[in-house]
Image (cartoon, rainbow, N blue to C red; front, side, top):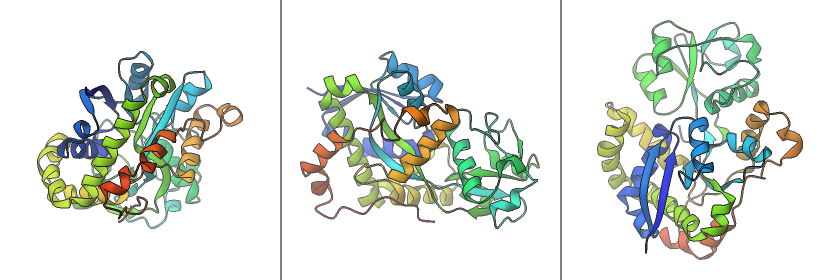
Length: 325
């Protein structure tokens, strides 16, 4: 009998292409899973209680908030990781060649963010790390906000001087005439993290293995069937994400092919940076939790040792995912 799964996902733009690939390659059924529900939920404040209350079995996402839950005794756990990088770019009206040139300029950011913390916004936390890594004190930036959904459009309208964006919005911003500064990739737990609760791992290991296998098959489809995946991008993904520009869609397609992790293991530096964002929210975490205290990869290792991944790729498993500009 197929194993029922109620799945919540947190980011349409980042996660939907993979979900569409799993569907296209019949990954859920091949993994022995019946996908009873697939629900997009914006924000950890809305999605995490659903997992705690038993309203879903897995969340694809929730990269920072589970550390806060774990601190307070809730048994959140991560089983696998699809993306270990943030590949943001800085877009601006005037060319900027170095992040330090943002000093004294207006940076459009989510209303939650300030120079001290992201206050629950994972992308804004990434931006703070980008600035610090680039030698820029965030206190020297003027944070400003917009009501527009696409921040780069607010830059076009003169509401600010610059903003950070992720693919495919960097391609959209370039097409709109903005200057784009591609930044060195930031190691970061990102995109579809297989998030569940420890009692689920203990009582439903077959479900957990099935989720891992379905995701592995979706990634395999994206990496090895580019023509078929492009058909999925043109129909399903373009429609759902409302992408009308072919070049933007191609950019998103290439990004997914490059950045997805074929073995689903987290990188240590990515986990470290995600942990830093959790500490920004709750400093006590630094003293009471280890960065890897949320991670359990024994089922992933079981799947790998069974030969499942090698068989998928006929022995030619690609290397770890990385950003390709």
